[in-house]
Length: 337
Image 1 (tube, rainbow, N blue to C red):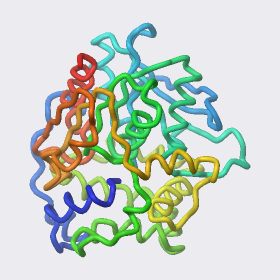
Image 2: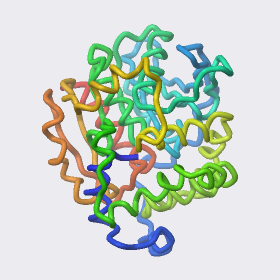
Image 3: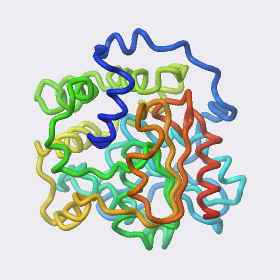
């Protein structure tokens, strides 16, 4: 989910040497949800559009002529992370687009022959293709987890398409070279699922147990979020996408240089490996998930434009769903930078 360096700081500060089972079993008593969380359960009818190599499923809210905002989910989540954010932004006059990433929900590949690639530049290019298909020249981009990385890649490589950025957990662009370096043992513990995915047993286990596997991840990374089964199951339905397992496994194996990307994207990845500075107006958000990195100092120099950082105590990794009003406010505020 995070870059290795960011995860090292966050995980070492919050977990130490606990096992995965003990982390889940010893979770703190859930706090009362922030205002607005859980107010909505669906977006209504979804839309589909051909974009690049995909037919992308997406939710849309707000006036068609409003300033466009594209909100991007991560793993193991889906568009429902923004089910309470979108109405707030729509009421403020924004045109809100919330797409399923490749391998999730109703998004499908147009060809059975297309390589099921999960590398970072490709996921970003999917969103550029979506913007082209919707005739959106420039949008405010917001995201967490894979979504924050994808938004950051767009802001770094195609800044003319990104009016402003809201990024949970800060700067998440992946450097394959940096990811080859080992971390302290306590931090490596947090990568258990990535090492699991690097094995054939892990692929089989994830395919057979996707629902329960991802629910465990939710509990570990958001220990104070008292989500119910219905909330989880609405998102879990998106993991039934026929390409979900292939995309997830390739994404994490690619990050560890255990799987190759496509050569035609090498130039993009070379630029990203240098951790390019992001110049568009940006608000970064951290939560309890980020541990010692929550103050944002570790990545402050990666943003050269107008910038601010916000900390949300008591909130886990799924910031937009756990605290939708704070996330929506960040989108509105960054638009004014």
